[in-house]
Image 1 (cartoon, rainbow, N blue to C red):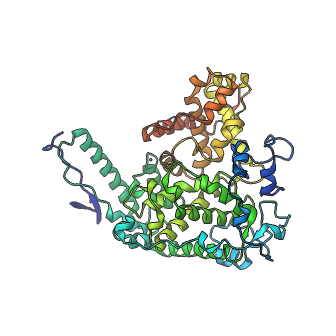
Image 2: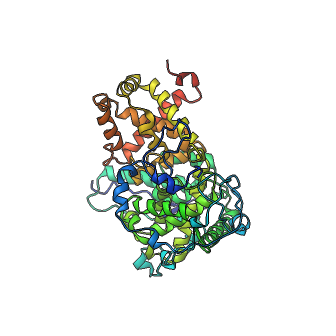
Image 3: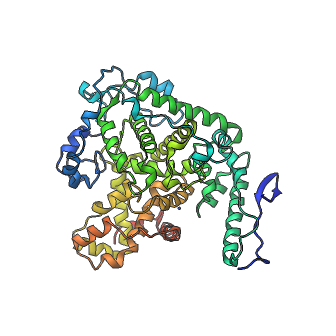
Length: 505
């Protein structure tokens, strides 16, 4: 690769085309929730969180699920455990081994409020060893590992020196293609100048990330923007090593003596249903990694526990961090081909970044899910100002915002757009800062709803509900997402911090 020097840092050279042709908390257990015939209104007496326990579609699937294999037959016998649990939700720096693991991952933990303890029948012994098979150690060629992946494991900044692009365009390349490639190279160099600094300028990184992060730089950029990877290069290696060890030790402790049946059961149901259209999520290595991440997160956060929908939120992190180590199409890649140390790092980094994200929106998942209720109410008020005709039509057809937008808030629109498009959206959410996944997401949802206004106003109740549950976004690409984000930014500029404008007239 030809290169030039910029302040001591390596940069890619742009192409010259002149001589060339032209992406729980409930008082009832999960089992009791699953036996329920339907949800009560969110604002009714003794409200149930819509996302807890099972998905909205599970009411329709309960019969087919009962015809499948018996989950209980596959689970080991129960194990008695005696200890207590301390909530670590507000202590990011707390060590799992020091604070949680010393308590033995207590049997008093459940998805019910802390005061209600579990019975021995809900505590099962550890999953069978074959549930957690070690990853195979294949050659780099067989596993599609990037060269010098071990250096990237130690410090993601080492990947900055391994980004290569052709210095000579292929024959018959158009001038338009050359200009697009040169623009991409220029953008990558701007990111590299920020990321290679001894102290990363967060404001500068956010400014660049708002318009999208190049895939080669996304993993490191996300980890810095979320506050997981230190901005200071001197602290980076030691911090990563410590946090990864904490997670790996936590996994060993979590499954050493038994699992919380109510939590484990629901996770084991949801994970196989996560992104079933993508081959990546059908592999055993992927599913077991997601199960471990979600289970450890749930027991670490008893105020919320595991809520259906969090299984969606973990996937963009897993996909982005996995792609940092392989030269292959990530959505069809088998993580079982990776050396164990690589998969362990991907899993640990995914856990901590998921934790960072959920720390900012945990009100969405605690008892009665007040965060989502507030967002749904705010979405209705905002839409009233943007498109009052649409809101009037929804009211005439007796369509409540909670009926379609709850999922938009609970899963951050991940059921409405592809994972690749979600990843592109999250570039901007992280660039927005701590409120990106809450406040800015509200404006994205408003722009998303208004986009379909003309079609919706021609429909009756049943047609509206069917349409909003299966929106025609299958062919959406990055340009569609960027247009949506631009519209959301426009509405945010008009209405943010102007509460009087949000009140219906």
